[in-house]
Image (tube, rainbow, N blue to C red; front, side):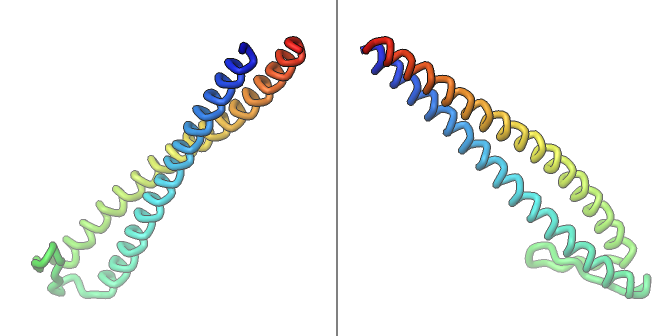
Length: 132
C-alpha cells in the first residue's frame, strides 16, 4: 500500500512539474509572438519614415485614423513616428528582459523536474525493494 501511495505522489509531482513547464513554454511562445508583432510594426514605421524624408517639409500629408483621414505636416508625422519608435524600442527591451527571465525559469524547472523525477524514481525503487 505504501508503494502505491508513493507512486501516486510521484505521478502527481511529475504532472505538476510538466504543467508548470507547459505554462512556461506558453509564456515564452506568447513573448516571442508579441516581440515579432512589435518588430513588424517598427519596420513599417521605418519604411514610412524613409518615405516621409523624401518629401519636402511643406508637403501636405494625411494620416488614417480608422475610416478618417487627418491632415498633418511632414514634421508632425516624423515626430509621431519618432515617439512611436521610441515606445516600440522600450517595449521590445522589456520583452527581451521577460524572455530571459522566462528562459531561466524554464531551464530551472527542467533541471528540477529531471532531478526530482530521478530522485523519486530511485527512492521508489529502493522502497519497493525493501518491501519485497
